[in-house]
Length: 156
Figure 1 (cartoon, rainbow, N blue to C red):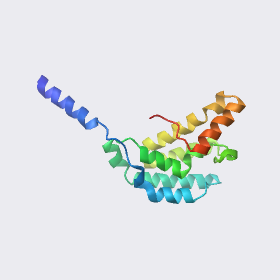
Figure 2 (cartoon, rainbow, N blue to C red; figure 1 turned 90 degrees about the vertical axis):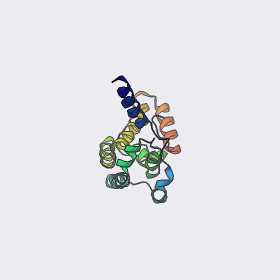
Figure 3 (cartoon, rainbow, N blue to C red; figure 1 turned 135 degrees about the horizontal axis):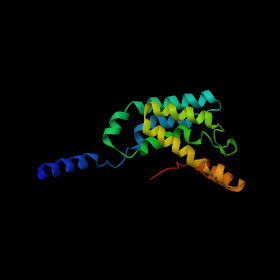
Figure 4 (spheres, helix red, strand yellow; figure 1 turned 180 degrees about the horizontal axis):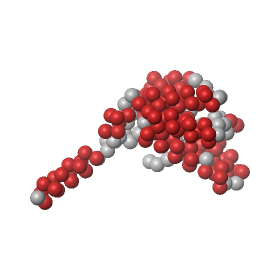
């Protein structure tokens, strides 16, 4: 009994071992399209961009979920799509949108891949934290750094 239980536990852990990461090159055609387009300037433009990202992610979300890969390619897609800049001040190259638009964008992305929608939500939350607790100088410095470098704020 103990031997078969040990084998079952080992088998479960072996299957859960993550593969290294997804390859950003898999979305290259989308990166090119997004980076050649300007950032949206309207609420509807941002939501359309979110829907497009959702559609792209939905194409292989179940496979990526089963493979348990680190979502480097998907984060690169969020970066090239401009969605990481949605809440950033326009003065620094951000989208200048409010949280009402951000919530809708997060939900749209989550329709295609719930995990990536969650990552977008966490990024938007953490990238704007200085706006709540920082001085004016800190707010500007953090927003400028994040937006101009297109940083993803999250784990890893």
